[in-house]
Image (cartoon, rainbow, N blue to C red; front, side):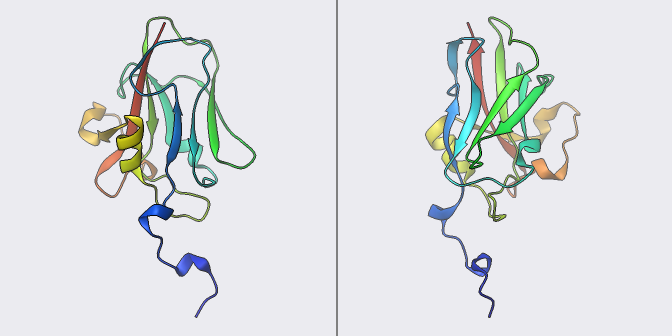
Length: 151
């Protein structure tokens, strides 16, 4: 047999999950300079930032131009918009459905919903926009979303 621990089935408690979302889901009065990001219980895989987006309004709204950056341990992802966010505007943070940790293991999206107020994002809500396969979860959704409103 192989010595690679990748062959060992991973228990549910071992799946990567979100430990913090900033701003919190459904927050209102969020300062336009508030950091935007997520923290995770495991180091996340290379390139996973490609499956995270911030939308103006809901998920069918345009994405906010900016840069996603990882902490050195790849457990915190922060968004730096190219321009300040707008006042009194709803934004939706979208975490794609095929995100994995640094070992390629799956992700506990149910925890995002139960603990952080996330909502499943179903493809028929896209209004014709096509998302690549990296956005799709095994349940047919396109990941989870967290909305907030600025001051």
